[in-house]
Length: 250
Image (cartoon, rainbow, N blue to C red; front, side, top):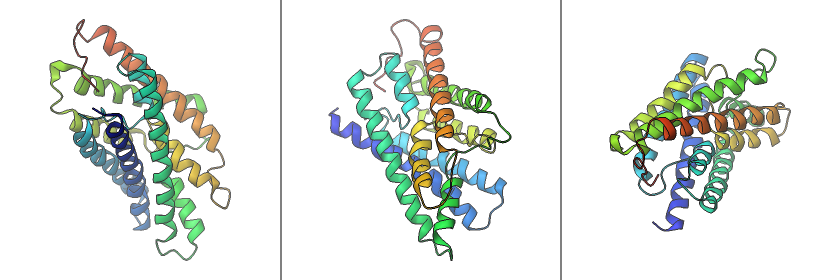
């Protein structure tokens, strides 16, 4: 598989995840949905787009769409360092592009106070937590657990050859949706550093004091997911995969 095709797939998949997931939350709120309905909409939007995106390109790029997944794959020697770096660059670029377009979508959505509405929508569509009620270590712990579950499912459904990979896309989409339903109202259920950084940075630099805790958020959404992904990959590789098996090109 040539390098360009892999990077294009990683860009499109990461962009789709960030844009459709964020747009789901923005659209639900714009339609006057309650917080509970907005959470359900965000969970479904993320889960469904991930399902179809993984199904579309898993045989090409491995469908990482997530720096934490890429780092876990690299740590377990499933991709080399150069490819991992290229994947990370493309994933963050895609997330920033998605954040920029979400910004435009919110601004031109017909609001009377476009910038304020856009900033509020961007904050809504980006994983956040209330630092006044939830300590940073707790957020890191929750994000670590959620990402551990996600990456454990990725290893079991997509990497382990005994499962054949037939239901990998559905399993990955469902676990993301379930995790958002479980903790989206607490930490935002990011599980993905690019997903938090791209749209979050766009909201942070918009006029006004929106997402003032942006850099604190990034600590939680980088450290938690990366630690969780590493733990899941190591445990599955060392204790579940039979020796010499499961080395699919993901």
